[in-house]
Image (cartoon, rainbow, N blue to C red; front, side, top):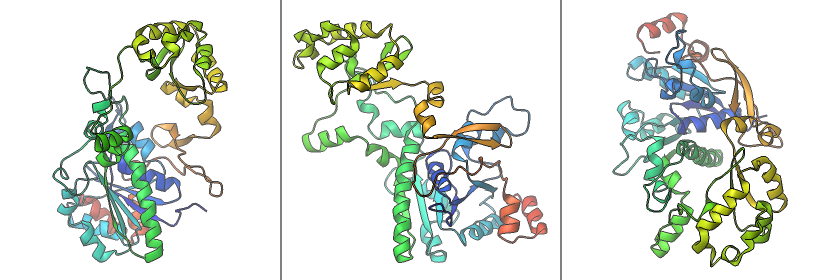
Length: 398
């Protein structure tokens, strides 16, 4: 038995943050129905899909969508039509959770605010996740993942001293907020189990990401200071360092002594007081950079990794995308799972976020093609006749 196998989730969310929530719920057993507009589906359906696609399945080939959409059923409905609104209420009749990721004005324009839905579905939990949240002067401004990182303050302390703010190479803010939102949803489900009452969960991506600013959050509010950027020179122990087959990163501290670190680099000159004395080290950083970079330039990161672990040195290996897919650690924990997609074939999907001792993880199916489950859900599930189903298509309601 899966934790949420009796849960029905209606997923109106799009792109990455909300779909992260509903993907997790699906992986834990929930029946997730992904709802999209027939002529304007989830925007990530076209992300990185081939522009030369001549098969007519352009919207079903996106790697982004086929990762976040896995395990869900999919329908299409246009809320701009009265028939579409009627269908939506039919979906909500037995639903436990509604997840949406629009700016507040969008749901209000269709008459689907939480206040309105609560009157008809008092047990419904509605999760709204958007860039700035449901209230405040920025609430109705469109947001995107790449813009949330600088808005949260992280970019302001990233990069090198004297240089411009920098963002990370991956747009991680949306899935990060999605995991936070999932935690909030778990709490709301537990509250409903105790009281029988649903509620509205308001999640701001910016606030979730800003919560990760631990150093700055403790410095500025309490001391008026800000975290400094990294030094461009003389600070290799906070930067990736090149070796023969890639990059590594090493940090002082932990359970290793300075002598242990010198032994790893096989550089006895690092024991000179200019480098071994923490008070003198910053003034001699450029020379130390030269020594350690020269010491590892012909060595393998995979040879250094176990040696560093044995010496209890804080050590990291920069893995490429290919190395990540082939990573023996992730393979040993079955992190990636394979599914057969009807359009793009067999694909490997990043999957397991949690391991349970009693209810094992299961990726049930690939992501749905656009409107794949319309007939199943509308005719067999909601009781529309075949004639009604054809009429809805003619009205462009689905």
